[in-house]
Picture (cartoon, helix red, strand yellow):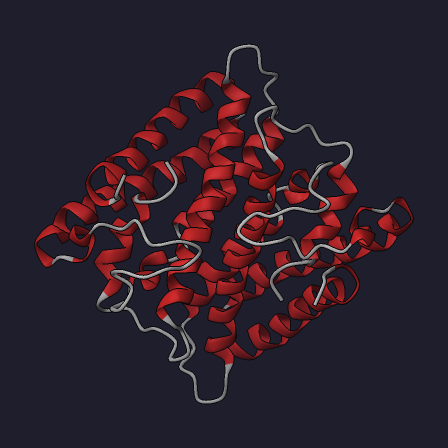
Length: 155
Length: 155
């Protein structure tokens, strides 16, 4: 769930985005791992609120969805600059080589666009406060995470 | 900059917040470290846009400020549940024992409130697109980070 959806957006931008001169590859990898990890925590919070028997906490879900949305839209593509194809942030990157290959950028662009669209929808649905709708949108969002993991993240 | 401001909000809520049964202390510590790390990356992006000679990129600053705002408002207090006073996420927690002590909660609550207010203001100022105003608000926001670090984060 947590990691590869944004590699898509990432890679689309990776070779064009300006990178701060001081950014070391390990810092960029660490930042992207942190972003995915924090989104994963928030995905877990939404999931916990929609499971059978759970008491749905609207405010909790809104906070989690807003965090995912803002991170998804933050421009993580910059974190996939040249030099970050391999290396260690908190741990070795799990990005597959394909994520950095020109011939895979169209597919990557699609999964990235899908993810961002569903993350924005997740925040909108959360604001509505309907538990069933949140559960349905959570599944759609999770599907876009998985789509990227399947093709662009190592197991 | 990155870490302790939210310990404030954190600790205010720490002993009341419901925690998912499956949440292990190391996962909670990892999630809070990830949140701070991702905010730190975004603080760096804003800073880079306001330094002498930098070309101010309004959209870049908005994305960064929105991410900081959403993470600040995400309810990280839950990540400071009992059992997370010590321990390792990505690394040993740098939270000081004071962050978990009843007699320091009022002070912690103030620095947390200050941080959240300035993070919200940062997003609003970023949306305005005025480089000088962004620079000034960035300094105010950074000051609230430091206030918490000084008292509640180990060096």
